[in-house]
Amino acid sequence: MLTDAADSLGRSCEVLIVGGGPTGLLLAILLRQRGVEAVVLERRQRPGAHSRAIGLHPPALDALQAVGLEEIALARGARIAHGTARRHGSSTSHHREHDQDRGQYRGREHEHEHEHSLGWLSFERSWPARPFVLSLPQSLTEELLASRLAELAPDALRHGEDVVGLEDAPTGMRVWTRSSRSDGTDATAARPRVTRWHASVLVGADGSHSTVRALAGVETALRTYPDTYLMGDVADPAPPGRSEGHGHSEDHGRSEGSARTADPPGTGPPVGTSSTATIHLGPDGVVESFPLPDGRRRWVAHTGTAPSASSAEDLAALVRARTGQRIDPLTCSMVSAFTVRRRTVRTMLSGRLVLIGDAAHEISPIGGQGITLGWLDALALAPLLEQVITRDLRHRLEDMPLLREAARRRLRAARLASRLAELNMVLGRPRSGPLARGRDAVIRAVLRSPLRHRMAWAYAMGWAVRGRPAALPRRRA
Image (tube, rainbow, N blue to C red; front, top):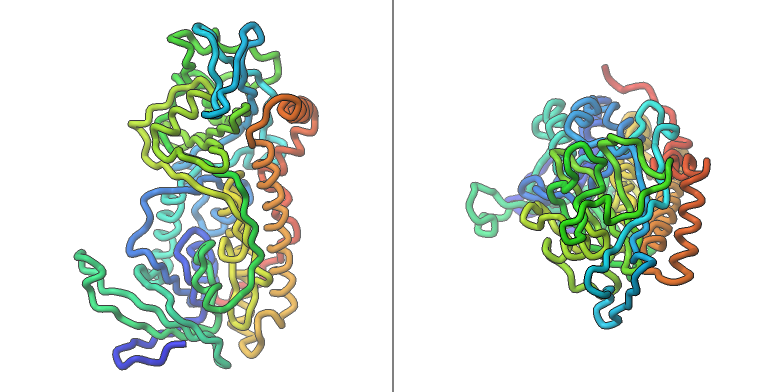
């Protein structure tokens, strides 16, 4: 707790949201649309320029529709309508030997690798109204949300506010923030300012390293994984008129078709598909690629348990070695190495505090479900928080049955998402010999049977919308 400094400012609002990422911004818009005075505090001085998250599943498009942003998001994003899995390996007519020191494969001169299709799936049956996952960089998503919030309340989003203390008082939450007056010069040279906030409800939407969660002393269960990855965004190498995800082959100038065995009929997306995500499975680990807007593509490569790869050139080398495709590192706009962990709070509710998004349930980014999970938190809790503001200010949030049940469902959904993400990681780990053949056989059987529709439903997060609380009447017109 901080004492009130002589130069501190006092401010108040009904709901104070810490974290100006996609989840915090969406919740603020939903509350403002309902007439609830919500303010968002963001530590960053300015919006982020780069994106880690890109996937907006069909349930996330419901959220965008609820705040009037679905149409513009669809216009600016790339639609991923199909997913295809491919097995990368050496030709049976040539011998290959494994270089144990470098974890790579080497062989005789003029030997070429090829890929086999394991199968493909479509989201058409999973979500007939929205048969795709929308690829939209997080920076663009935040830009759209911030603009919408500014339309509703120009001063609702405050950058450069760092939470340094909080107290759960009988009349609500007290929160202290420290900021600097930014005039375009070095922010560290500016004079710090302390602001004391009072809010009926405090929402921690400040990500996996949540300051609010730490200050409130909310316990978490943490699990780390050995898997590491390298990802980057580059110009899409796919030539015009060809299906995305099948770029130029290495093969010493030979065409892609001559480097691969022809796929059996029915094992690839329809000809002319413009939005295909591709999973390349091989002995050295998975390589994934996803369409991005403006003719770009995101590549993600498994880098083992002790990676040394961290540059765009490293990513290009991994992609070429494992898929035969060339990507141009000079076109890379973002490259990031990351590890994987899972962290889940014991409870999302504590006194007058509620935790949502990654602050409540951090999961593996493999599968790209984080933003959608956070937005479903916001959709479920916004009408209930409105009810708290208008009717139940005397009670702790965990003592309110509707909120407690909603939080329980949201954590259950997060645990299921975690298990699906873990399955994706296991399937993408380096495998060779019988383990690789067994994995490939299972994937091939699923993707070439009606079970692929069930898999598409799972990847599109159809399971995540069950049990959403019915919306309550709006507080004000």
